[in-house]
Amino acid sequence: MNQDTRTVAFYTLGCKLNFSETSTIARNLQDNGYQKVEFHQPASVYVINTCSVTANADKECRTIVKNALKANPNGFVVVVGCYAQLKPEEIASIEGVDLVLGASEKFNIAQYLDDLEKQDETIIHSCEIDEADFYVGSYSIGDRTRAFLKVQDGCDYKCTYCTIPLARGISRSDELHNVLKNAREIANQDIKEIVLTGVNIGDYGKGEFGNKKHEHTFLELVEALDEVDNIERIRISSIEPNLLKNETISFVAQSKRFVPHFHIPLQSGSDVLLKKMKRRYLTALYKDRVESIRKIMPNACIGVDVIVGFPGETEELFMETYHFLQALPISYLHVFTYSERDNTEAIDFPGVVPYHVRKERNKRLRILSEKKRLAFYQSQLGSTQKVLWEHENKNGKMYGFTENYVKVEADYQEESINQIQEVELGMLNAQGVVEVKIKLPIEI
Image (cartoon, rainbow, N blue to C red):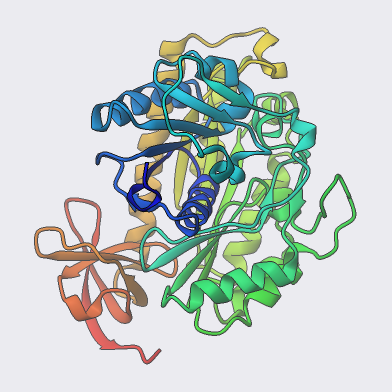
């Protein structure tokens, strides 16, 4: 095939970290002469970046492979990501997959694409996860308002339900000067907001090759990024409660660029279950972190991850979680239904919760989440906020988020897109979005 005609399409499953890495892989392939096209279009190569946090992500991979081959039956299908690292043989058994790359090889796709002819057997280049001890910096530029900036990878925690350490290896971080270089590259493309991402970003600072010494702390990272010119906003995507220190909370409260929005995984509001999960905190510490934020940033948005149906979660223990969350001054929940994962401790735990009970508990917490979100939105009505407008025009409306993550809408104005404007939060509409009155644009 003529090099000039080579095209590549991407599909990403899972977290913000995966999106940042897909973007980096895409830029590498474009530098090697590939033209990027949409996934539903015919392409020479299809790259599927997988997640394996839940069983559904594994099943979804099969569907996406089929969709790629519908667009081009002769397309060369490459599967990378967490699922590819954990179960390469399982992926190789999916009809139409040509190449599976593990954690140490996913950034080297270009060197495996000399021959794009489909073969009878799938080629696997996997590694033992302890070989994934190097760091590759990444950032995504999927739209022109926001970018995901990877600052850390891997995890040294041993939570009993989690496969991420098996899929991504030990905790390791980008060097501070490289994070700042990537942030400046993002700023130079007129992107207004950066979202910091990683597996365990509060553990930022550990070097490569298993070096447990922190070259820099997470606070030093935040302080340095706050000085990067031409970025208007920076969000901390998700940070463990035991790693979210008072110093960081205080800095965010008075910083130039960091917004009052925290996402703090809880997983359970029961100390009994937190211990079984091998989390590194109990509910008292979690409550203290939330109260510390509220004390100095009363209008901050606080999101929470929670798992339902973990082995041993009786109705009584579930209600502990429910009441704990109900009483906390938080803004929304991300609710995950526990699913058994191979090679985790929890898969052998007694007290398996029937699936229909897990599903029902998930629904109860999602209803609680919606109540929390609406109460938080209502508490902000009448206030003046800064909104970054996104580039969608949906039925004559444009949408954006305030610094503290309230979703708002206004009549579409093309000149407002990717601009930050001051608005007054008006009424909450039937779709749960706040309608706003635009004031004068903010001088950037």
